[in-house]
Amino acid sequence: MSSADRVVLVLGGAGTVGSGVVKALLDKGFKVAVISRDSGRLDTLSSFVSPNTKDNLTTIVGNVGSEDGAEQAKQQVLKAVGKITDVVSSMGFSWWQGGPPHTQTLKDLHWVIDCLLYSTFVSWKAFFPLVRDDPNCTYTFITGGAGEKLLMPGTGFLTVGAASTLAFCQVLREEYPNVACKLNQVRIDTGVASSERLAPGFLNHLELGQAVAALVERRSTSHSIFNINCPEDLKTVLFDQHV
Ligand SMILES: NC(=O)c1ccc[n+]([C@@H]2O[C@H](COP(=O)([O-])OP(=O)(O)OC[C@H]3O[C@@H](n4cnc5c(N)ncnc54)[C@H](OP(=O)(O)O)[C@@H]3O)[C@@H](O)[C@H]2O)c1
Image (cartoon, rainbow, N blue to C red; front, side, top):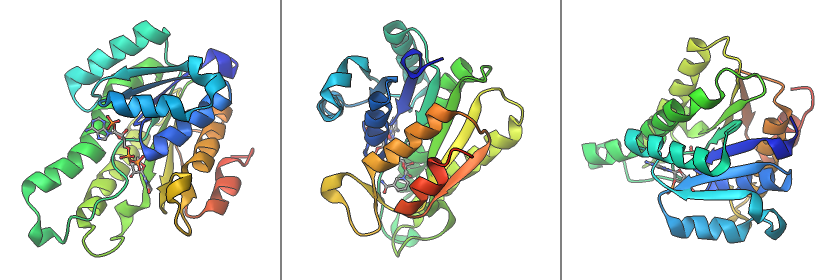
């Protein structure tokens, strides 16, 4: 199956990380579908990708963070593109620093878990069955290293939310050890930003996108965690043909 025959659904594809992945996949000749709650973000994404690849991008307004919304979006995507062969899940948010736990409310914690865990789970439950039984298919989670440590004072709920996503990915690896689909995780332990917002040590979302697209294209490993701690890791970890 060539890239042109593969259709990648990028969950969170209108976001910082997701948009880099979308552009890189399109540049490699994949067809790509993106669902966002915000039509404005989808318009921005359409004008961001390479103009000659725009016809291969399908955008749908929907909410994959609720069970009904995810099912509805799934039907719309399948109607528009016919099939999904690969999924990249990049759900959540770029940063959270609401303050130490004693200053936060249950509502704040609920919001964080909703973005990082519930939306990842609900969308996985809706879309995994489309790719689960085919060894030519892939499902790749983007996660954050914040789940293993406090990044700085006031970011505690980010750690709680990111840790819940890491735990969910671990559960999937252990519950489905023999699943045919290539199930992988790219764990990023540094900041990611667009070219205009890059800070020292950050990953450019375009370079990260190219590396994730190479992993999806290769589909040679499963149940692996690719740890990305600095820009150099993109070359050694994700572009390496041996992994
Ligand atoms: N940016 C970084 O520095 C960085 C570093 C390490 C790891 N990561 C990881 O990368 C992932 C994506 O981060 P990002 O920086 O790309 O965030 P982002 O720019 O805020 O994009 C997040 C995407 O997730 C979707 N989403 C969030 N909550 C949702 C919900 N409840 N229902 C439906 N969709 C929801 C959003 O969809 P809509 O388009 O509908 O709003 C958005 O497209 C996160 O898991 C994060 O931990 C990011």
